[in-house]
Image 1 (cartoon, one colour):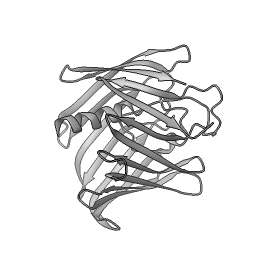
Image 2 (image 1 turned 120 degrees about the vertical axis):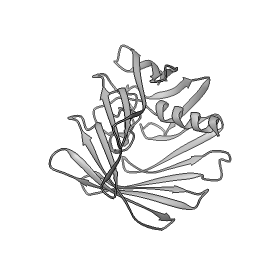
Image 3 (image 1 turned 90 degrees about the vertical axis):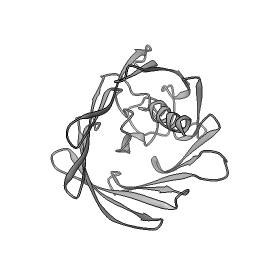
Image 4 (image 1 turned 45 degrees about the vertical axis):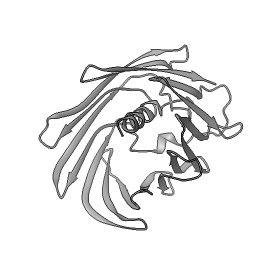
Length: 250
């Protein structure tokens, strides 16, 4: 279980790469990540032929796949042990302006689901309502949240509440360079990729409990290439442990 939890965290940290000014399906000469190596684990990324639409990535026998409608990611599937059996699945829904309005996560081990429905506010925040329950029939669970966005659409603060009581708060800072994911079609639409940057790279992440006590945090430092994309990432936990990730691009 410890190995699986560690791998899930590295998946979140490594799930970062690429650069372009829009969601165009043409790759051209853009930086697209093809490989990342972290903690001795190699992540291999693949794309639909001639496009910047990510098809899948693999690591340590695990597989995650992506499905698109146009240039929007509409489903991801995670296969932990058997590439023919889906363990976890997330679906994404968008409005006519291509804004994410809902995401639904399914755990096929417990046969349960959780769902967030998003509302965009005039003050550059996004509110969400939480639902959970059996697959196909989630009900409101009292969870609500607010995502605070900076001028690049990156979340710099997230607050989640249970029946009005603060459960946790997350705070983030970013650099001014190109995110590893910047050129991957559709990634800039996803709201809850808190452990990565979509336009810029995450520098710090801090999580506080409902009483304001720091419960988890880390700091990232980067070595950049000539295109201002990360070639190397060092993540240092607030406990003092660190991990180095190296990126390789097409």
